[in-house]
Amino acid sequence: MLLQDLRQTWELDSVFPGGSESKELLAEINWTENEAKELAKKADSFTFSNETFLSLIKELQSFSERLSTAGAFIGCLIAQDVKDKKAMALRGRLESVYAAFSNVGSVIDQKLMDISEDAWKDLMSLPEYEHIAFSLNERRMNAKEKLGISEESLINDLAVDGYHAWSTLYDLVVGRISIKVEIDGKEEELSVGQAENKFSSPDRNVRKDTFEKFVQAWDHEGEFCAASLNHIAGFRNEIYKHRGWEETLKEPLAINRMKEETLSAMWNAISSQKEIFVKYLDRKAKLLGLDKLSWYDVDAPLSSANSKMSYDEAAQFIVEHFRTLAPKMASFSEKAFLDGWIEAEDRSGKRPGGFCTGFPTKKETRIFMTFSGTPSNVSTLAHELGHAFHTDVLKEMPYYATNYAMNVAETASTFAEMIVADAAVSNAKSKEEKIALLEDKAQRSVAFFMNIHARFLFETRMYEERKAGQLSVERLCELMEEAQKEAFNGALDEYHPYFWASKLHFYITDVPFYNFPYTFGYLFSAGIYAKAKEEGPSFEEKYIALLQDTGKMEVEELAQKHLGIDVTKQDFWLKGIELAAADVEEFLALTEE
Ligand SMILES: [Zn+2]
Image 1 (tube, rainbow, N blue to C red):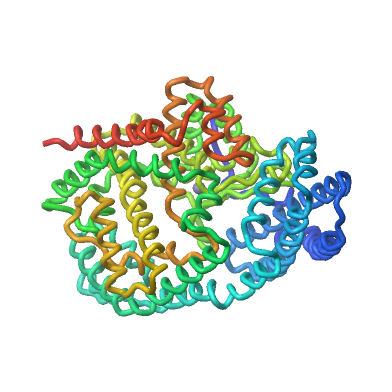
Image 2 (cartoon, rainbow, N blue to C red; image 1 turned 120 degrees about the horizontal axis):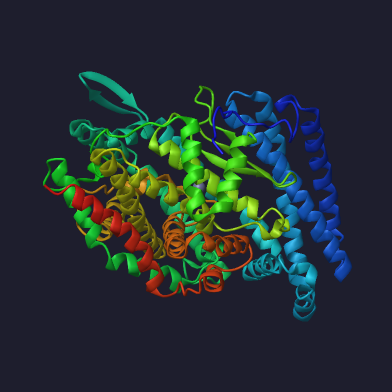
């Protein structure tokens, strides 16, 4: 089928008609507010029997589906028009519902712990729990490993001002930083984000000068950032100590449902394969006329060669290439394009970036992005369609079996992106275009294998040292630079010692260690992609079965069951790295003089 004259705005009225004025939406929000209160009462007075438990779990899941549908819908309204005040007010109301519902969750966790081991085992072996036993077990285990409910709720309450507040304060500091630079003889005042964008300027003077001013700005706020980071790490270490958790990585690994051996195997495999990426960085330096790259050169463009595509062409291109390896994902995507599930129009007033969101009660998804025809837009579109397909294959599962961790969340999206990126390279119309596309892939590998590796090395070491006391600005810079040198195998001339201050991810208090899941997701997906290329379109059934299990097992079991692979061993990881290395080899061959 030829995809043409596609609509570029999404269709939302079938979910709740009338946008933020919708009476149906308002009624739904009223319902969630009342129902959250009802559920709180039910949780408090809950007494365990097989029947009462099953009916409570059913009710909780159906509530979660309705709440997340309403939440996703409001998210769509705000994304399509960031000035939609009505939608923002509705979001405020829903946030209170989320908070109330999370308290219901804590009460229920307590009740789960009170069920005897034998009764629990019997219960979980019933057919009704086939798909959700994993997530219920996980909840019960997590609750058991923590302190009692009164201590944990005290921690939660104190964390608002004693922990999360440091993160908020950090945001405030970042917000007031202004970096003065001179570009083309004109003085400009840049925010942190704007300054970071200048690191991909084609003009080295702009990059270098902005970087110097950028570092000065962070140096100026250094004491402040160090205090925030020390208190965030100190608070977290202290809680772990009280819970009797010895390893800093215990919680991040549990959240990502993976074993320490798996993480070590991944990083060890990466560490053993850095030379080829160093060669890429060296070649890039040469192409830019430099001896060695500095931190601010890594993202510099090599050329401006890239061809644009219309939205219809992009849709056609994506669906066609999905078809070669994943025919069901291709048909799903075609339907998404035709049914108005994608908001892609290039207009002002939309929020930046892209996302995919789901309406569980409708078993539908929507994709949001702004399409202006660049290769990066095409890959974002493929990426979000991958997410949407993941949600689609899970739509018949009970709600508690659909929550997957961050490390596997990016599996389907990266897989989809890889198909399209490879197709783009083979379809490149000129050598320059091919080089630009391969360079884009190489840059991603450098980000996952070097930049994020440095973040991980720094963060683990910093948390360890923090146990013995606070770290000074100088010490933080030292640790950061060491980590960068190690992760980049000494490939750079100048590093970014203040990266611990400038990278927001170290200050996120909701999720610890916001780094290794990215690399995991990328390589896990690369390994799957390698398999798909070996086996062809018939692999898709296995791939779908894997996606359907992402919310109900640990990653080791997931990989073993569906791919016959042991992710605690380096072999699997090396295969994924090999794919990335092959792109670099091609890049090196094409740019040889
Ligand atoms: Zn994504």
